[in-house]
Every structure is written in C-alpha cells, then in structure tokens.
Length: 440
Ligand SMILES: Cc1cc2nc3c(=O)[nH]c(=O)nc-3n(C[C@H](O)[C@H](O)[C@H](O)COP(=O)(O)OP(=O)(O)OC[C@H]3O[C@@H](n4cnc5c(N)ncnc54)[C@H](O)[C@@H]3O)c2cc1C
Image (cartoon, rainbow, N blue to C red; front, side):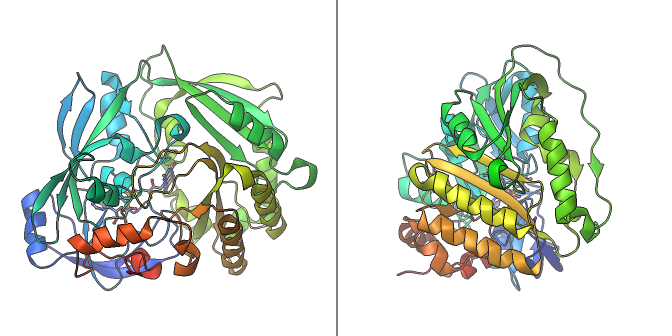
C-alpha cells in the first residue's frame, strides 16, 4: 500500500496534522494495512476540528471504499461501504423514490463519518439521529477480524460505535434504513422572526418534519435573536432538477471579507430577503439539505488562518436565558460570521457519545482571530452551566475538564473502546486532547 506523508486539516483549517495516510480501494488492501498495526479511519474530513486527525501517526482514508452493496425496496434498507457520501446516496436513490432518513448539512460527509459522530439533520426532532437508522455495522477490529454488530446482538459495542469517533474499529460497511420520497423537491415555508422569544416560540410550535432557523448573530438590543425560520416537507410533485453547476472558492479570501461591518450589512440584506409575511417555495432537495455544498471549498472564505464553529445544545428550561446571554456576547464581540443556526432537537441519540439532547442547538462560525478562542471558551462555559454540551464534531478548543461533565456516558464509552482497542491504536488528536479514552 502506498503511504503519503503530508499535512492535512479538519474543515475549519485551524488544527492540522502531519502524518502518513493510505487510501485503499479494496477491503483486502485495508486488511493488509492492519497487519502492520491498528490505525484510525477517516472520512471526508468534514469535521471542523481534530476528530479525524492523527498527528505523527498513520490514518486510513476510507473515501475510495464507497461501493453500494445491496438495496431492498421492500424494507428500504441500503447496505454500503463506509466511504460513500450521503450526497451520493441522495443523488442515486432520489430518482428511485428513497432518501436517507437523516442527513447532515453537507452531502460530503461519508457514511462512516455520519456514524462516527451520530450526526443529526433538520428533522432530528421527529426522526432522531443518524445512528438510530443504522441496523448493522461490519466493524474491522485492530486484530484484523471483521465483526458484524447490531443494536440487538451487541448493544454496548454498537452504542459505543455510534457516535464513537472511530474508537471501536474501522467501519467497513453499514446497513441504513432509508425513507420514501414522493418528490425531488421540498415544499418550503420561510418566515421572518423578529426576536429570540418569537424564534423559540415558533420552533416550539412548529409541526413541520424539517425545521431549522438562520439567526442573525450580529443583531442586538430589540432585534437580538432575529432570523429566518425554514419549515419544510417532502413535496408531492415536481421533476428531478438538473444537476447544479458547482462554484468554488479558488483562493484564500482576504480578511476584510468577513469584517464586522461587511457581515452586519450582509445579514441585514439576508434577513430582508424574506418578505414580512413569509413566503412559500419549492426547493431542490440537495439545495435544501446541503445549502453550502454549492460552493466548493467555501472554508477558504475565512482566509489562511481558518475558522471555528461553536455548536452547543442546551436543555429546554434554561435555553432561553442561556441563548440570550450567548447571543449578546457574540454580538458584542463583533466576531460573528453570517453562518449561524438555531434549531430544536428532540431526545433521539444512538450512542454513548452522541451529541443530541432534547433542547435547542446553536451553531455559529467565527474567523480564527486572537479574540475568538476566548469568546468560544466563554460560550462553552455558558453551555456547561446550563447543563448543555458542546458538539465534538465541530470543536477545536475545549479541554478535557469542560467536556467531562457534558457527556455522562463517557466512562462507559472509554471502557467499551479500551476493551476492543487496548493498545489505543485508534486514538485521534481529538480523543487525546479531550482524554476521551482515559479510565477514571
Ligand atoms: C457544511 C457542514 C455542515 C454540517 N452539518 C452538520 C449537521 O447538520 N449535523 C451534524 O450532525 N453534523 C454536521 N456537520 C458535521 C459532519 O457531518 C460530521 O463532522 C461528519 O462526521 C463528517 O463526515 P466525514 O466523512 O467528513 O468524517 P470525518 O470528519 O473524516 O471523520 C469524523 C469521525 O468519524 C470517524 N470515521 C470516519 N470514517 C470512519 C470509518 N469508516 N470507520 C470508523 N470511524 C470513521 C473519524 O475517525 C472521525 O472521528 C457538518 C459539517 C459541514 C462541513
């Protein structure tokens, strides 16, 4: 197997690793690699921080192991290799009337990566998390043996693997439950929201299957928490839209592009894009689920030094107060970018280290400037005080102490991972930084 030594990074481009990576095309080649020693698997590097980095060590890039293995139209169960992307599954199955039950905000995430972080989608409040639709995983252990695990047959190992950040083995393939889709279009309703209180009330009252809010993180005072709510259902008519032409960001953008006055002006116009009384429109599925994928390499817009995403979830009761505090601090910092999302999550979670909890999740991007780290740590403290948690797929800054109280099944997770990987060969920069595998 050919190994390539180079520097690579997570999507935020702040944390980087230098190490050897191999990109096998066949399972046998992957098994041969394991004979030289265990190593973590990585997907399409769409995690923002260091979840998929192994500084100074080896990692196996799974993106060429992307074959579809079987599909049962009676049950909607799809079996596929772990390197296939969610966007590719949508592209191939939508014309046949099926879509993945849960999709994250980028179609570039692989099946293995979606399991590794037990990702959530815009329908989390009704469908739960990705891992709750996984019916079987073929897991390659550091000993080179493949185990077929299911939620019923291996409940502990299964729950440690869903959201387990690759710490229980390399996911070779998995079976997922798909859902029927009667149209390639989403029937979308957009509403303007003027205040945080109104936003929370609208998210609470929404009966839509897919529901997500854009929030103006530069707004303060009387307009604090204003934004746009998107509520959608799978449509009932429409033709497959033509595949869109993707644009790309060819170079690292200059710093002024995301300066505070430019972001404020952009947000002002973006908010007014939706008329006061709201509007209804059809949107192609890929555009609705993966709005940012239309621009390849959009992470370059933040320039060479990269960016952070802060994402937390807060339990319902303290959420209103904690969100107000966070948004005030963000607006005051003048560091926010236009990318800010507010959403209600349901209780569904598939694994011990899954992020979702019932409540509200806030995600905001910040350019990597000197003041950003301090602000993000303060936001993390507010989340911790409110009994919430930080999303590890997005994190690059938290400490083991901050995370300790947030993931209440961490010890059970460490025990399950250490039992199948006693040499800690699967650890990544993230698990080492946050001491996720340390026994207590
Ligand atoms: C624009 C954008 C929007 C996003 N929106 C959402 C969202 O709405 N909801 C959400 O939950 N997340 C979201 N994310 C985060 C993203 O879905 C997750 O980080 C996902 O894990 C990325 O998949 P990947 O294939 O790039 O995995 P990577 O980032 O490469 O890896 C993620 C983790 O999975 C492990 N892993 C990957 N493949 C395997 C394998 N085959 N076997 C074992 N372990 C493996 C890695 O070791 C690592 O720990 C978004 C990210 C971006 C860039």
